Length: 492
Image (cartoon, rainbow, N blue to C red; front, side, top):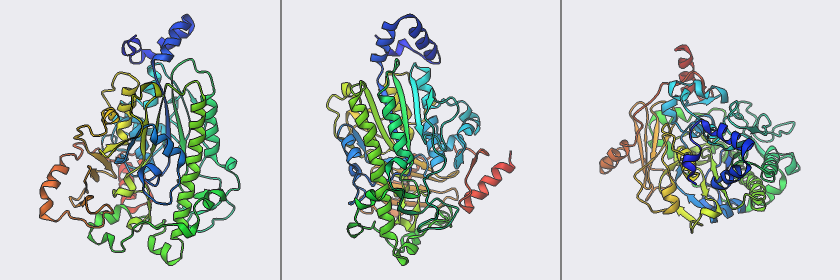
């Protein structure tokens, strides 16, 4: 039976309902024909996981195990280095430069951002329209989920708690940033509850194929997890990230302006106060904790009736700087802030030797939407702006002419290929880094005539469209973006 001809477009839900009422055998066939999808989203997760080797002290056994059975995209990047616009882009399949969503946005306001956003279909809605049961828990969009975007939503505790009565190390109320051992037990953490909610869903009889998503909060700040996760990373063993004090001396002024975050600690502060190792330890502890939550879900899947017919995809919504570029933050167009894990594991019954594969081709999380619907045999969505990466799952060394684009505000873009990172800002200033000899991005060679042809090639990947900042999108933590937010609202 050809699944493409079986359910098409918006008629999918109605067709599936009719099948339920009229013919159980057809429903069973539908369930067998379509693979399930389990999507695991990790907030603020940079490349400090085992498969990416971003830090020598990391301990992520469950993510490591997933990687052994799937394809690891070592050069995957977020559409934006900020939760709200990155997730809006991934869920709509549209770039920030298309929707004008450059800052944070309320979940139910995404489709009112501009005309093209209004025409979009969330990826979960697309699966629903094609006969899938959809369920989610935790942080999927920026806050929770948009209304009616999933059949079932398990909720999310507000904020990023639990929180102690008093802050431990960092006392600026404009940020959640803080670190230390708290609370006492995993059971007190929202991510633990989300993991068990997903496990229960996987232990439930579903009469349709499912698209299921779980959004985990850690390692988003505050870096609070129980003491046992800190104990996994003894402070005496902690290695600090590479650091160059004069790193920003050769970047344009606008690069400093868009990354100015007065509420966040700097690396100089961390060094002077003896806190850098403690902060690295706390981030690593938070990553190990969330890895354990992912393990709960993956173990439940393996023990379920869906083990052979479920694709698993794990991604972080962007990277995070833990002292690099003198930052403890995301919100930048440099490698540490844009690079994030992406692992795709096809269903067991479709793998055909695709286990333990690694590709360094540049991909974007914007590519998830077209890739997942292709893996499930659904018709393509012509609105999708990403690229289907299934050829790289089949052959990690396939010819790949695409670059990964990250956008942070109108006309500010980073272009990443296998070798280079090129950044162009709205005032025309540039940065260029050659990763063949400068993986830390310490030396901006944009003004070196030897790289003029490289810059020409990189510019070809810049977005043609640069939508105005949408008034439903806002960011107040940075003076540069605060001004753009206010201007957008005045132009309403």
